[in-house]
Image (cartoon, rainbow, N blue to C red; front, side):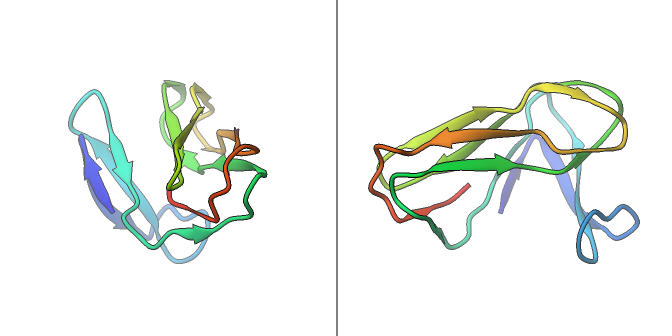
Length: 105
């Protein structure tokens, strides 16, 4: 995982699933997280729902989630307003013309 525009640490005091959450403290106006792992297997020619759990101060955010296949990058706008609790912004990527069988985020 590569993080730019923020410091990253594991936080076991604020957890949604598992034993810890990724805590980001912004050091710039734009924070980027790139998952540098193995691609996950996907079914070609489908639509996919991407989401992320966020907990932060109540207020507006601007965000994009990207699903990257060998053929293209598909972006979903997750901008909105956080409640101050756990929020789950999401969007749908339409890969119905993409024959790829793997993707990363």
